[in-house]
Image (cartoon, rainbow, N blue to C red; front, side, top):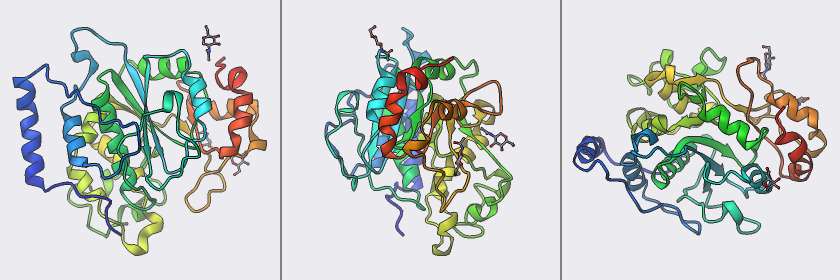
Length: 345
Ligand SMILES: *[C@@H]1O[C@H](CO)[C@@H](O)[C@H](O)[C@H]1NC(C)=O
Ligand SMILES: *[C@@H]1O[C@H](CO)[C@@H](O)[C@H](O)[C@H]1NC(C)=O
Ligand SMILES: *[C@@H]1O[C@H](CO)[C@@H](O)[C@H](O)[C@H]1NC(C)=O
């Protein structure tokens, strides 16, 4: 299996990184202006160009003379149609200027009809994604880069998929994330999970050394909310990415989920205090098959389910999103949207 794309050699990247602080010193007000967003789907993106421009974007909204109202950027990572857009539109309603939307759509995906409303013209340049490959990490990096460049007010970056839904109102989600005193990222970081060793050696026994020892290797949900500071860190990072983007051994493909390891491992090595350690996205792993969690079907959609999905084992927070829901769930979800899903008690 081929890695989805190739970033340039170390020397070039070091030069690039060295030149960035110098540039910022010389031109503090320099902010890249042109947007990577396209009104149509675009393929064959130059990843280096995108990352380079993202590195130049402001690292924090607090660096502005006039403080701006922070936004949450919602990053939709999908390889199918986005079928819950009516529910998300309802979620976003009346909250203009507090959110942004970005979509990484696999080039092979078929859209039943063009995306409209808030979802129109929000595509970032995309490349193919597939399981058991680093392509989902690369796609996430593209989304983060595009969102960093596009709007300096994007302060948090919430990764979601086509089968994710919100389970609280926008106001509740916004307050929970943006008012966090420590400005943490909400990302799950676990160790000691049963399959961890097999996951670690999926590319070969010593391949991750010396950058990542087994003791440093972590696992966590692919779905997270990153702070702008951490989004920047991910975009600049190349050392671990060089390892995590190596293909897994053909015999290890059932242990190959690099997107569940790269982000938790990187952030636990660089800034564990800046991370919640838990995810805000509920998933049901009961009766899992072939690495897929439970897929909710229409008869399961009830007010009680939404209440149950919100509950965590920690009274200090509530789940804000949930997955995975089949596309047929749209209708029953819309039916309880206002009274249940967007009604926080
Ligand atoms: C948005 O605002 C309008 C007008 O105030 C109101 O009728 C509507 O219910 C609001 N929608 C949501 C989802 O809060
Ligand atoms: C999780 O999925 C199982 C079936 O796989 C189901 O029986 C159970 O009710 C689900 N739990 C929740 C909280 O939805
Ligand atoms: C809460 O903890 C119990 C026992 O450890 C576990 O079975 C359950 O899945 C946990 N629930 C959530 C929402 O994490």
